[in-house]
Length: 123
Image (cartoon, rainbow, N blue to C red; front, side, top):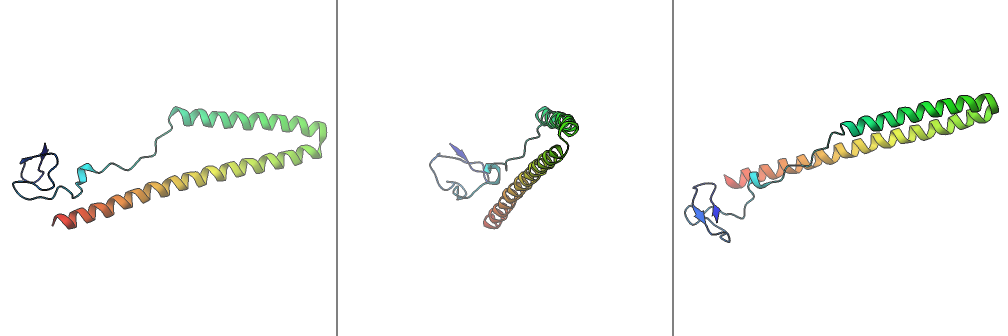
């Protein structure tokens, strides 16, 4: 059984129009629209991820210091390469965050447009 949002009349579940007021059930109801997916906060996972990378950077720095004392120039080259990888990784994180932000906003814009269409159709 479907209940009409306008008049409260009980209709059959396969009816396309309300038997009392004639409301079209084919139209989209705002309450039936799913909420746009929200980006989950990482919480403890994000903190552990940060700890992992800080530990990695500290260990890498210690290893580079030891290599510099032993090999000199090669350690500088190695540190440059590692720094380059870190910068590429950071840029990857930034682009991922920007892409997620764009996708979220795109979903919200779709929902707003759909909401405007429903309001215009109901009038």
